[in-house]
Length: 452
Ligand code: GLY
Ligand code: MN
Image (tube, rainbow, N blue to C red):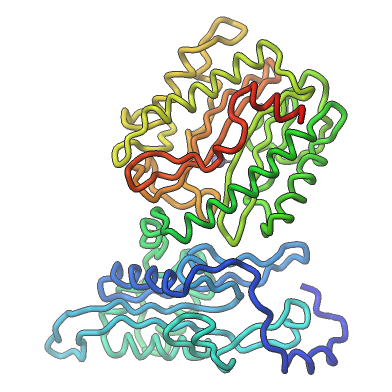
């Protein structure tokens, strides 16, 4: 971040400015609190310490909160830390002061930096009036207290040292453990990976999350429709990405949920093509895998369209194989039993197997060989705060989960790639809801949308 310009007059103003309202649509504070309680219960008397994401280093990167931190707090400012003390009813042990502990949570906020705030906007710290209500966390303390609070916890019950849960690869977490060891005069064992505990919580979405996921689908569908109206021979891939970006912003989205993929012709066969530097040519198909993020929740949608608005017979044939594979997976779905993302197609309960079998038994390549070998990735993944939300794959699909079904066939020899991807919610009764139902699915629906 550039902080070299003169900012003194602005500093004076900022010191008296109440922090800007946060632009993201938040869930009620009680939703985030319930998630922290759930994590606390999973700690079995241990403690979790999570750090917020830092300000990005590069000028062109906007700030994005760490996904787990956001899930637990809804807090969208940099540099904070969250301490969750898990409840325990463990009895005292001889020679130890260990005792039962109640659940406790503390949000630590860094000291405000008025110089940085001149560039990034006003922030809160523990001294900000009404900060507990604003954050929704039971206790708010200055970040400087974190190390001494942890020291006291471990000194009070040495077993805590073996039951510390943190995000992996976070420098501040490693430093905190090292400093805590020094302040205790004894070594601190390595921490456990807290994301293994947040993952099962994040897999099942609550009502507020589902509401946000529906909103982000609406925005992403609108952009995909704009794409269908805009694709023509002579238009660049990047122009299409730009038109979609404009629609996302109009719908209040913060950013794309991943680098937009607009691949025409041979580029349609590269799975994560995102150079978007080619020009759409007559006779191409264009794979458009592009969607956005609304209030930190992601959508993930792919459609494949013909450059001139009409699929050739061969393009339509392959399109229908991919669409048929998606339908085969939907038809095979049984809540609580079906699994997703079984890359090697070994698990009979996986929807990947249903889709693969369909692809491998319909149509052929130019050498009369089956098409199974042209499908190169898993059938889908969880979607939530991250476009690839964490899960242990192959994952059993249960009510409240949101995931993609995205079969594809990529035949470089024919410059022909087709992927169709929709986001699905498993309803309480075990049925599937297609969150992208309002977007064209069939080849004919796509063609009609291109001529509007
Ligand atoms: N939509 C890109 C992916 O799921 O990998
Ligand atoms: Mn996807």
